[in-house]
Amino acid sequence: MTPHARRRAALDRWLAELAPLWTPSPFCVARPAWCDTQPALAEALLALDDTTLAALSADDDAARAFLIPHLPLLADLPALIDLPERDAAPAPVSRPAWQYIPGRKAAQIDAFAAAVGAPRAPLVEWCAGKGHLGRRFLMAWGGEARALERNATLCREGEALSARAGLAQRFAVADVLAPESAASLAGAHAIALHACGDLHRRLIDLAGPAGAHALDVAPCCYPLGADDRYRPRGGDSALVLDRNALRLAVTETVTASPRLAAASERLSAWKLAFVGLREAHAPGVPYRTFKPTPAAWTQQGFAFFLQALAARENLPLDPKLDFAAADAAGWARHRAARRLQLPRLACRRAIEVWLLHDLALGLEGAGFEAELHRFCARTLTPRNVIVSARR
Image (tube, rainbow, N blue to C red):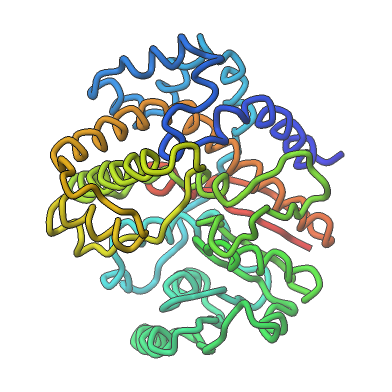
């Protein structure tokens, strides 16, 4: 059994043991079943004041320390999710070409390039956008690169940036999910920074049969394009991950401004006000998802938002509905859900690391030597792991 197989098997067991805590979302089920089996934990969470909740939500170590007295298995988590950080010298830069990239993105690209180092074969950037990542490699080590991007406008803009910098970067308008994309990987070193969902899964699935020489990809947004049940790449597993589990794996963010965070809180509370009314209208009916709401609805106040959502979802509203009371109920449920969510959030990195080891196992099965390593601090991006594969 390889190290990736051993780690995935250990995470299989750990996640299965704690599944009752991370499977149900308190935003969908007002009182998850574990509240009855762990009443002391539920009581402690619901008693948290806003300041303490904010501190625990922002610090995984502090949250784990708070939860361990109730959930001793969490003490095993650091060893299960630990991944090495690759020692890397900064990638050299010979041209000042970063002025058109936002600072955080530029820092992520710098860290990724430094961790990967000089390409092992002709470079192919997968779902390249404007080709910033490939251009960074060319700035450091020269050579040529090909960028695959389905948006023709981004291709034109990337070509202009490469021409301005005097770099040999060619763009192809291509959908990497299309069958013909496989041909571009033959003998290539493929790179992708934050390839979402099926974009990174497609690259990893194709790398072996298409004859890629090397691959470095930082996966992101695991639920995008996923089936109802995730299909393991590394052989059978007793762990069943649905889209909700994949969504949980990427809930950690570090980029939201206070304004956006407040808007997200308000939207959650208003949606939960609607959910509460829907549950009262049809008791015992399981939670049902609904499409995203237009941003304009929230700009016109709670009453408008609730009426518009109820009309779209065919929920009759009582003409005498007390909107202030419904709003207050939504906020109360939101505050409770945020507290009961903490045990679930404590498991999210374990799910992500399970997925990363599974991808590495898929590459091993295709004839590669595969490694996982962190390329930057999680404060720069929580999606900070590279899946590396070499023939």
